[in-house]
Image 1: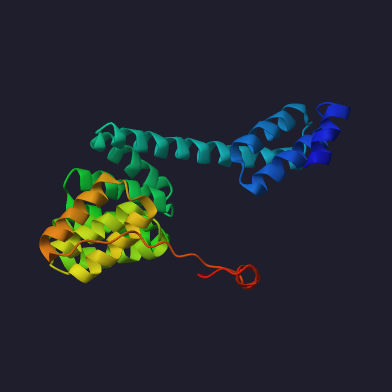
Image 2: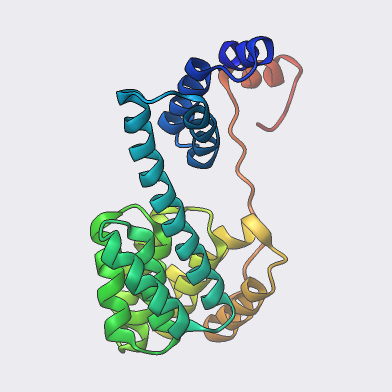
Length: 245
């Protein structure tokens, strides 16, 4: 890439270089940058099979970028509590691109906020079929399951979300809350110990710790910080007379 860009600085807008750089960025997933270089190539190139092929690809790029813009508009609409507007955008997007998991996730999120829980769950399951490693999908499914009164399923979904994102305090606190609500104090304690080792000042974690103490009569001790040492470090500490390792 550095060589190609250096070539442009020496030769100016060269057809072959512009096309090569454009396709290089396209292969790397830099769609907007690729479009800019390929447009410059098409503006310079004479009529040819390669130019016609590039123009077809540019049309596909524009369609993809327009679709991504619609997704971002839907995301913004949900944040501004305009869920119905977001659903309209998402339904049109899904009709054109039925294999994009993010669209189903956003649809499920919007439907959940509208308290249309069965529809939200259906959309999220579709997202899961396309992308099984997103912790956010499992978290949203947990919220839907909880609203449907299936607390055990909600715990299962949250457990999977936490397996995928092991240091997510939100997932930890949500799961700890459910265990406390069910009287499963050992499970709750384990999660709260993990959470406060990550952020002991988190107000929700502090409140849940108080709830744990109220229910169990037990007080969580000081945070235990585990330290892992390499063999060389242990040997060095022994050499210098360290009493504790």
